[in-house]
Image (cartoon, rainbow, N blue to C red; front, top):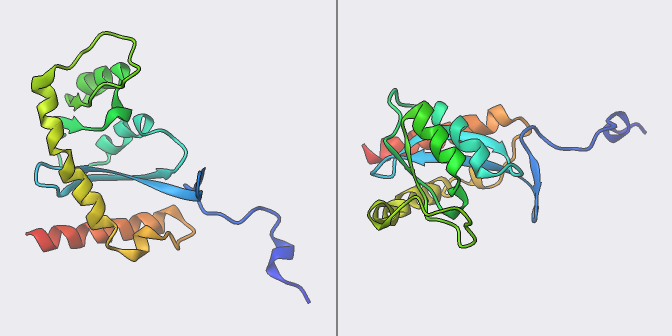
Length: 161
């Protein structure tokens, strides 16, 4: 009897899937506005760092205007990324400094007070986790999975307006 795995020589996986500590996965990068509603969403494999995906996410936004500020966690502490976002997109990056930072401090306490509002982005991530189709990626193609992420975002926006 001839089965399909005899015909396929490559390993089974979809596009935009990368290895993680727990297996294979995809990363959803999202930008939320000041109320926690989504402005931009980007899909990538799980292996690249968030710093490399920030600019791509800002360019794939749903709105015409770029946000004034981006709030990120300690992983976003990068002076070249901060300078690039400010120069090209006119976006101020607010992220606390890493503990092992060697360069001089660039952000003071007044700017970092806005970091307390990061919970609104985490709330958007929790809203996206309510959709089972997004939590467990069943789709082989990244375009289909991103379509379901956009559908979930549309439902989130309709619930809040």
